[in-house]
Amino acid sequence: MDETARAFIEEARRLLGRDYLPKIERCLERLSDEQIWWRANPDSNSVGNLMLHVAGNARQWIVAGVGGAEDTRERQAEFDAGKVSGGGAARPTASELLGRLRATLAEVDAVLARLDAAALLERRRIQGLDDVLVLNAVFHVVEHFSTHTGQIILLTKLLTAGDLRFYDFSSAAPRANWYKSR
Image (cartoon, rainbow, N blue to C red; front, top):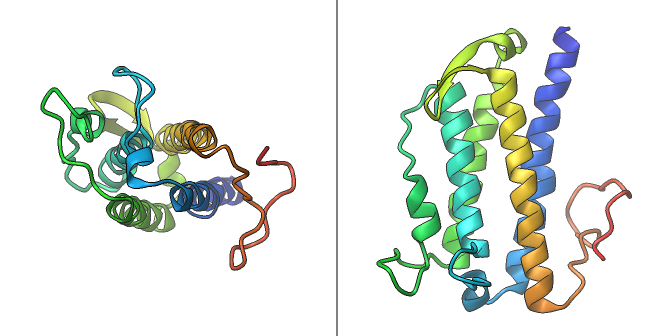
């Protein structure tokens, strides 16, 4: 069981830091600051909002919920950022968004790296839920991050009408061939 648990944790770390993050980085390379904050309608989220949201969620569930750090998340601010009207917060630049996301994922990775396999079956209080298995928290963050990475990819393709060339990284580790960027 210990080997399976370690493999689960390592795969979560790989997906977050070496699969999803490089795809988001590739998207931001192609977007202007204006495109990063574009919304299809007032009830939709921009790429910028989604980046703030995945960082907030990962920090709340893993860094605070699993790792024990203070939970400082202001979830609504993730969605209010960049709004032109209605008192929305300032628009962080692409560099600031990436810096925040990378820093959060570094914290997440540090928590996961020192997580004991047996801890996956421990229960935590996360996001107001009293009985969350650590395993479920990790799975939730990976799934949540994946969903919103897909939305960021779709928005980028919509805004740029171009191939994101996910398998043209000059310095990234080889990727599986199952994913096509078209």
